[in-house]
Amino acid sequence: MKSPTELTEAFRANGLKVTPQRQLLFRLMHGNTMHPTADALFSEASAQMPGISLRTVYQTLTDLASMGELRLIDVGAGAVRFDPNVDDHHHVVCQACGDVRDVYVAGSQQLRIDGLDGFAVDSTSILFHGSCAKCA
Amino acid sequence: MKSPTELTEAFRANGLKVTPQRQLLFRLMHGNTMHPTADALFSEASAQMPGISLRTVYQTLTDLASMGELRLIDVGAGAVRFDPNVDDHHHVVCQACGDVRDVYVAGSQQLRIDGLDGFAVDSTSILFHGSCAKCA
DNA sequence: GTGCTAGTTAGCAATCAATGCAGATTAGCA
DNA sequence: TGCTAATCTGCATTGATTGCTAACTAGCAC
Image (cartoon, rainbow over all chains, first blue to last red; front, side, top):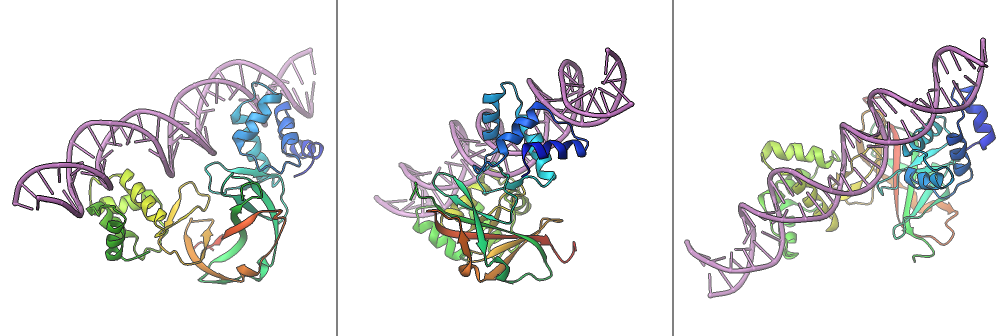
């Protein structure tokens, strides 16, 4: 994800306005490696800007995602998580505490897929399940 | 997933009762390659047994899953899907029509994972996104 | 076959994530 | 300084899933 300053430019360039709510969310997401849910981010945002609406959090995250600045990740735990890391990477999830971490995977281009039967593959998501150092 | 007959044995062996509702669901899931949602299965079941409850469908699917007879798959499209194929396999999803197909992947043991940082990996889910032959 | 009892079912309420909607507010340009 | 389209908040709504409970029944004991 771009820096808050660059995002400000990018939003204006797209005809979108840059509000204090959005700026706060830009800051909260920039460099964030926690993979927060919308709700978690709403809590953090509320601490700094009481009265901000959960709706606004969803809206801004959706905007960022459709601009390609965020990736949505679904670890199958109810709520979607947001990842400002848009590099080509994948995730490990701790089955115990739900913690999610970014991992870089080499060799995924060499996977042999059998049974595709006419399917054209655009992208691949790899999710590793396990336990983190704390929960082991 | 075991055959309906074998499941009947297995359920009784676990102290679970074998009801007509469960037998119907055993039959509907056995060999099913559609990856149905609970709701889709409920529709099919209702056609053969009017009055069956969606709650019962969920309950039975959950029981089967916890006995290891079914796998839950989440393609990030709202509802969870159920897969009677419990072999070591993965999935392709058509972004257009939502169709899901089983694929067998060779080479997933050779993936090099960087950034694990103490995480112990138990299992891996690979989801391929693309378009099916019809939607291409 | 008859009864008993633990396990099941149906149906509805409740929860949780996410989106739709509308009136009040405001960023950003002229 | 004003204007207007974009945005915000708050609330209603949707969709998937689970919780709860009274009525029901599979399957064992007799």
